[in-house]
Image 1 (cartoon, one colour):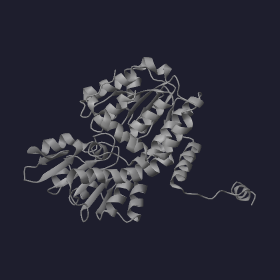
Image 2 (spheres, rainbow, N blue to C red):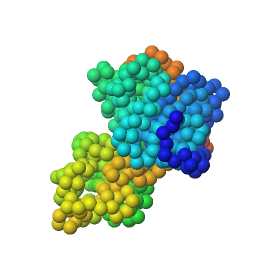
Image 3 (cartoon, rainbow, N blue to C red):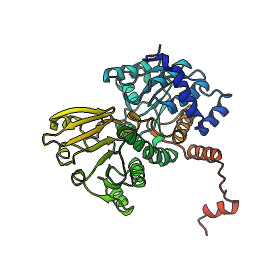
Image 4 (cartoon, helix red, strand yellow):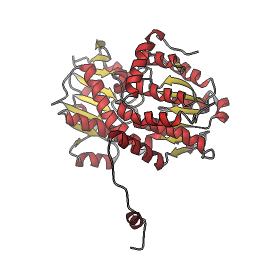
Length: 413
C-alpha cells in the first residue's frame, strides 16, 4: 500500500504528468516502440528520484512497459503531493510526501525496497546505500541500477573502489546527453526560476557568486550573466578556475567573494563550501541558495550559531539576523533550490535524462555479465537519444560518406 498524504490531489497530479509528457518526445517515442515488446514484464523497479511531473512520466512509461514500479522521493522538499497522488492512481506504488522528516524519508526508502526490486534508479545514492547497509538480503536479486547525479556517482565509485558494490550501476550522469544538457541548461534555467519565484527580486546588476565551475556551475553562471548579473566564480580545481577566467568571469576565493556577493549559489557537491568564516563578511541582505544534491554545501548549523535571531519573511526563505543588524537569507532550507522552491528542470531537458535512464535499464537486462562497478553508459545509447531528440525537433544532419569514414579511420594517409 502506498504511503502518500493527499490522495484527493490525484486529478491535479495527473494533469501535470500529462502536460510534462506532451513535452517529452524522446520518452514518448520509447514508450511507443517498447510498449508492444514489454521489456520489463515480471520485473520490479524501485525509483528514488525527485517526485515531480517529469519523473512521474518516466515511472508511468516503465509501468506501461511491464514493470511493477515503486517510487520514493530523493529529497523531502522536492516531492509534490499531487504528483505522488497521481502516480498512485495509475498503479505505481508511491512512498513519499512533501516535507517528510528524516525518519519519514528513510522509512519511505525502506518501503520502496521491501518488494525486493530487480532494478533500481537512484538520485544521490541513498537508495543504493540503504541496500548495502540495511537491506543486504535483497542484493543477490538485483540485476543492476542507474544513477544520474555527480554526488551519487562519487559515493558509488567509493564503494566500487572498496569492492563492496554488489551490482553494476550505469553512470547516467556521465552521459553526454545528460551532463551537457541537464546539468548545464537544465540547472542553469531552473535554479534562477527557483530563486526568482521565491524572492521576486531583480538579478540584473547584482553580483552573483557561483561556487564550482562544473557543468552545473557553468549553467548557473551562464544564465546569471544573461540576466545581467556580474558573475564571480569560486573553484578548487585549477583547470576549471582557468576556464572560468578565460570565459570572462571573475575568479576569486570564497573568502574574497563573501564580501562582495549579493547572491550565492553553490554547485559543488562538497560540504561546508560557505561556512562560519564567510557569514561575518557578507553584505546585509545576502541571498544564499544551493544547487547541489544534499543540503551540506551551506553550513546551516554555523549560520544558526552566528545569528542573533531567526525569522521567515516569505515562504521558502529563512532570515538570519546577525548581532550588528545585518540579515542573511537562506533559500529552501539550503536544499536544491530549483526543486525545493521550483518545479525543477524543464520537461524538454528531463526528456533526455529519463530516456537515458529507461535505456540504461534495458541495457542492464540485455547484458547480464557486467562487472560489479560503475559502468560507463555506451555511446550508442547517447547517440540514439540525441538522434531521437533531433528528429523531434525536425533537425536533419549530415552523414559520413563511405570515403569520409575510411579517411577518418585510416592511419596510412
